[in-house]
Image (cartoon, rainbow over all chains, first blue to last red; front, side, top):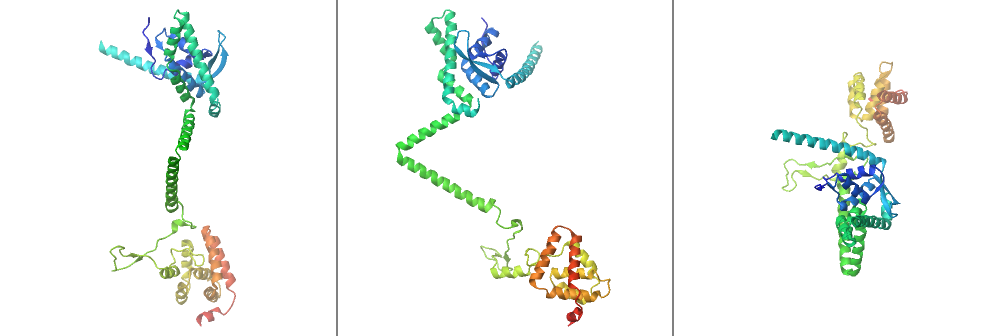
Length: 114
Length: 280
């Protein structure tokens, strides 16, 4: 079983936007999908998931509709707006820059230790 | 959904939030049951994973951006209930607020009137504070500066020429016009010059403009006539002429100003025998 890790601060919004970019989805499915895709490494704080969804909705990055699920129950499905798609691109680029920079620093540290 | 819609449809928003969280808990519980967890335990685990529902709802309301309005409304209702329950306290609180607001308003009004609002005069920047200074008399509290008495002010008002802009009194000539006047003033006989300098700026201008035509035959008579007319001119006529000249000078149109003066002299000159009256 993979070791679970807390999400780095500020990345939940990015991950939510990314999952929703693949298609309309409800809150529970977002949490499930993040855990599945990360091989259970990413621990989604469910108590933070809905406030984040509502915040993104209020910022106009997400829109929501109530629709029936496969089980016939009605659920709130979130989808990405145009503004949300732009934000996703910007956030992704920013994250890549940061992770690349961190990786470079870590590699330097390893080389220095040898 | 706009901000106002979120405020006005608060009840509906709460209902949808409740339904959304309920769906999450049910879906999670169903998943756990499908994996073999007993239903009761599955429900407990699902609630544990989500956290306290009220806390989650509060954070969702915060994210909605209308929380402060809900809090304000609750505070107002609580305050009104409390005030109704304790009328004496309510009266003291209202009195305190009234006095506080009144005192603040008075202070602001005074500060605004004294420090910020412009003085109710046409050109407040040119106002002067006039004091009297005594030589050798120094009060231990007030020094050698004294308030100005009204009769002294009247004297000053009558005599001073450089500070007070009074439409009934002529202003000093424009620098360019003054140079023009000085150039032609050299042709005026010394005796006239003395008399001329004694007079007000209005007469100064008119005489100078008269001298402008000094190369023409008979100029001394016409200049004398102009001086005489300038000296005996009524106060109202002087005021009118000075006002007209001032308007022209204000626009910096010196050539127009000079033309006007020349025209005035032309109007004045024409009566023969003035020189005799001047010399008499």
